[in-house]
Image 1 (cartoon, rainbow, N blue to C red):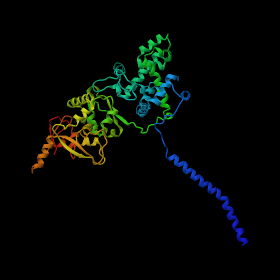
Image 2 (tube, rainbow, N blue to C red; image 1 turned 90 degrees about the vertical axis):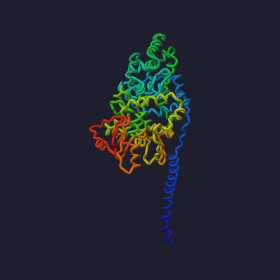
Image 3 (tube, rainbow, N blue to C red; image 1 turned 120 degrees about the horizontal axis):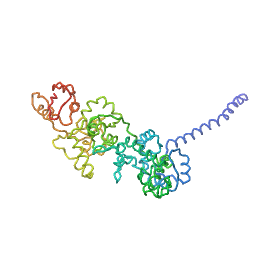
Image 4 (tube, one colour; image 1 turned 90 degrees about the horizontal axis):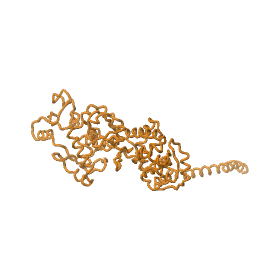
Amino acid sequence: MKNLSISLIPTFLLFLLLYPVAFSQELYSLNNATIEEKTIVPIYHFEHIPDFTYNEVAKKISAMETDMPFELNERVFAFINYFVVRNREYTKMVIQRKDIYFPMFEEALLDHDMPEDIKYLSIIESGLNPSAKSRVGALGLWQFMPATGKMYGLDYNKDVDLRMDPELSSDAAAKYLKSLYRMFGDWELALAAYNCGPGNVRKAIRKSGGKKTFWGVYDFLPKETRSYVPQFQAMMYVMRYAEDHNLILEQPTYPIAYEKIRFNQELDLEQLAALSGICIDDLEHLNPAIQNRIIPASNQSMAVNVPKSKVAYITENKEQFADAVKLTSEKSVALRANAITTTNTPKPAVAATTNKVPANQNKITYVVKSGDVLGSIAQKHGTTVTNLKNWNNLRSNTIKTGQKLTIYKKESSFDSNLASAAASPAQAPQFYTVQPGDSLWIISKKFNGITIDQIKKLNNLNSNQIKPGQKLKIG
């Protein structure tokens, strides 16, 4: 018995020694689980507006690295308060757009050896909206007036306005701002001159007794310009410290990657969208300078920005696409008329007219299949995404499998002959009458199962040239 008790002592001691370790490991695990649980389920209050003081803002501004002059005062602080408290929605809107345009601004400014922070000026000018138009006729991201735009190569006509081209207008803005800086030797005065014109800045300098700083001539500048430079400086701060003011996007947007394709001809943007399967809205978003979905002969050297995912498909079929998207006189009239109607007619009236049944066209019902998009459906049926949306009262390009779409197709001689052939026991030849804007490639797409070479062989064609009204044997 004595021996047994002695043999148990080491075991008991070992337990006492190890128990605190085991207990502490268990406690550590429990604490870790608690910490982990809190980390996994964060709670964000997007509407919370953190408090801030003048001194806190001043401290952050003193730590900013910038090539632009920046003197915090009550005027600038008031605009900081405006952008982070009173008009947070505007600030969130420009934060959402900045990744689309800032890279091209930075590139243009770097090319001209200018301060990068000038990119924030476009926010004050246009809210990063390439189609923004002022009451006096200034247009685009950088709000060029017609005469100033022409001085820097931003020409315009009824179909194309290069003031709305983001890349060209950014380069023009950099050149113009640099010339104003050379004129006044001060970036704040250069910005003021961009807003009110160099003549008004010179006048303010004379009235101030020859002072050559923005705050020195402040009282003699037009009222709008007195707010313009402080707004720009406030935005320099706000965009840097947006997260500190809880200006965080709930749903960030991402720019569409694109590349340029040059067709060197008149071009029908709707046809390009339909044949390539590109959403027409995306194509217009990437090409805001194109006004009526038309590139006219006067701008035929203009490149088209195309989503990167479609570039290989278009370039591999460049010749066919060039034929297919060539603008016809009939289509140019229709597109311009549609643009005028859309601009001048109230929306409810447009909705009422655009849903009318097109004349001399057959109505069909198409059931959406898995993998379908409006672009591919439009291409398959020889129409456009815009038509599909109008015919089916679609407010967006979203469709779902099983959804029924109404489509109207022109009754061609091919359709008539096909109907006759079905009614007759004899196998009658099938013909198609070439429509304006048609090419062999488009016709081959309209009738699945036949290739361009087969159409050429059936009709003894030595080239791809066809003309409206010409009858082609299809089968």
